[in-house]
Image 1 (cartoon, rainbow, N blue to C red):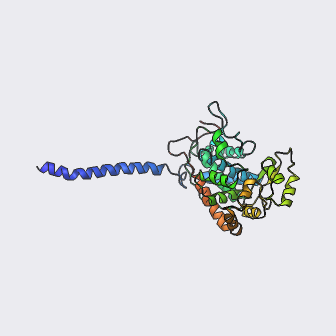
Image 2: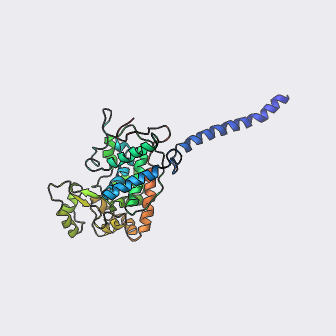
Image 3: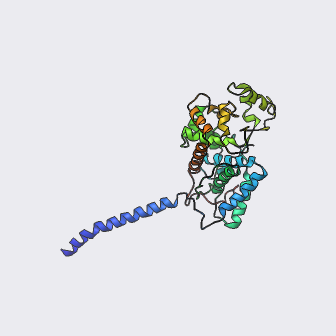
Length: 327
């Protein structure tokens, strides 16, 4: 009888140890699949400084590139998550996102990303993803133009496909009304206030005439002097690609002037002015207009959240050698 008694006492202990082992293995798998700020600390310790050097050079050569690299990250993450799908050229298997309506003849910076990738590959072949490069380049671009910094979480992997249809459906258009903007961002997990904070990225960069022509000729909630000044470079017909700064106050400085412009009915896009047009987000615009620190803090937090949109991690996806095509 001694042996059965002894077994009955140790069996629960063995079961507990077994369940703990399974629990531990499961959670190790979860943790290993998460993004982390020090993901490349041992595998490619100089990656961040390398990216920063190239971004600083690109922005110094052309200030507009800072806005373009920031927008590239946004347009990547809102389609399939932050997976560098926007960088892929068309193939026989899929049509990429570069020709989608919100991207065609508009999204820029691919050459800068390619240059960075080439430099990083020479340092650490097959280690750093294109998706992570895009995310870090966006942060460094904001900093290069005098904006705030944030800790970029790393460990994303690259997709092996892209989606033209999702790019057309998921990226918010410059013509959207407030309710549609709120819905578009809510679909990605953002609050209305986070949407207003992220829209502050329009404090830098330029836009083609075709994107704001309707507003400056047909809308009434626009400063008349502002509209007239824009019409000089954006005729009612033709000149679609003629550029104007989105923030006419300080287009190359990452600050809160964008919100002050909205208060003066000087939003360039219809969607911009919708944030301050008697609706629910007026108070957020007023807040960021009067408190630059609050805007920069909320913007940085929203960018971290955006960078966490459905990343590929672990064994999913791949580390592309060439950002334009799958391995």
